Length: 167
Image 1 (cartoon, helix red, strand yellow):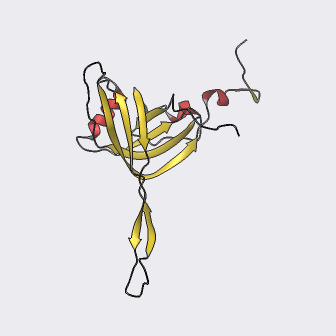
Image 2 (cartoon, rainbow, N blue to C red):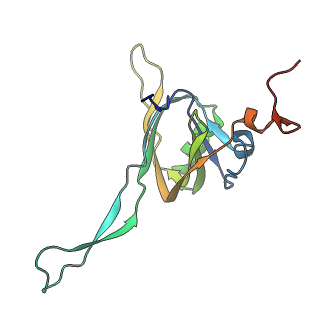
Image 3 (spheres, helix red, strand yellow):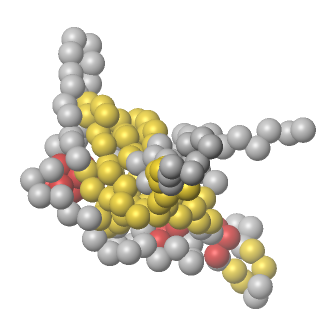
């Protein structure tokens, strides 16, 4: 079977005060957003549902119900650019967390849409290294929705036909 793996190269993270409209193409979705530039890596959505202990004196063994889902954090690494508006927005959250809207767009135009706030913006550097923020943690609040966006070229039509190029 042919692999359906998605390369991470080209993944982008956007932050916005406004909710993302994800029923159209990628450009429409990020029109009012700020890109967090120099994204090196990401890891996250690492939370889990809680366990509700319902064991009582009549139980023969421990008993549990599944509680609410906690989506955890999104942890990113960026090459630091102190003039980048996306990185500045994350840094501003530390002083008094603002709940912001985030959209992590993958190269295949699928995206993770969620709300959250930056908990930290660590700084790291050394000999023969760039200045980085590694382990920048965005705390997720509420659900994470995986959505499929249209690539800009999929929304350009000419009489119902996709445009193949300019003549």
